Image (cartoon, rainbow, N blue to C red; front, side, top):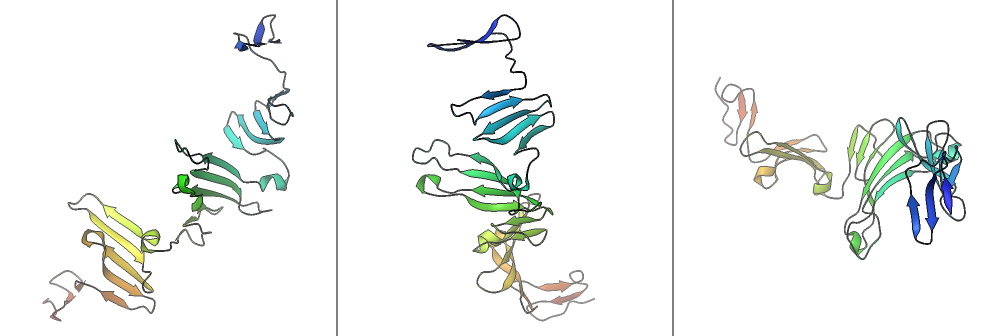
Length: 238
């Protein structure tokens, strides 16, 4: 059989040997191009200069002059409660078809008109690892790291020192100036660690407000011209 074009020349020829395309355009006059047997997967190109892709009876994404839109352009609040996902499957793992990373976008909760973006990753997918939320951005632009809803501009939550720390590194000097700020799991203290010294804690602030300096001195002012609380208890001159 053939599918005709706007001219008298066949645009597509379908035979037992397969499908052959020719140099003509296919004009479906703004109607749906059905892609499956039960009629719920289709492509529609309307007069609004937009191409809609419908899967399982629902518009999943559209393409127009402004780019790509996930989900329906307009609809009920129920349709907007559905999160839309960009998912990446594992590469070259023979034992698993599970996702290895994913970005989910949509309403923050059922019935909400606030949007959010969530980022998921998986470890050891081939051994049964599953997606875990690593970061989210809420409607106010707050960022939560560690699978939490953020309550401040940046929230970081982790189950150990490594997962809950912030690393600061300046590569201009040699060696690098490398520090880590950690809410310690061993005690309710905020630690400032020297990464160049096996992450040894150099200054700690405890929950009661006390400050402890470890392995060094406290100098107020310029060294030699202020007050130097050294280990020898000897004040500086000047």
